Length: 70
Image (tube, rainbow, N blue to C red; front, side, top):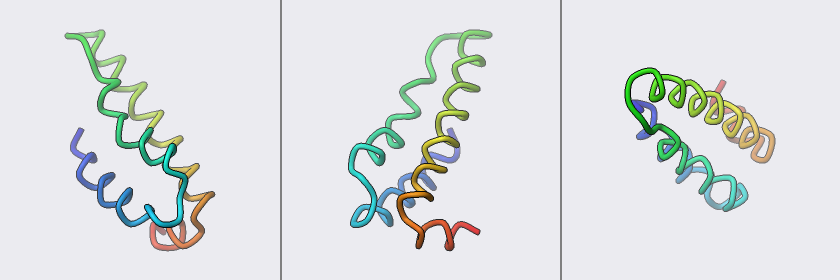
């Protein structure tokens, strides 16, 4: 996932304010992408949806992050 590096930067920036569990879950999103061919493609879609969901939750927990992301 090309966005992993950006997500790590986001996690580092949110560390003092956001919940640790949420940040760990976001860091583990690439682990969801497994398999080959169509199985991998489906898992990639699921991982991206999970990533968006976690980033939205992060924005809700840290208003400063939400303002910076806009």
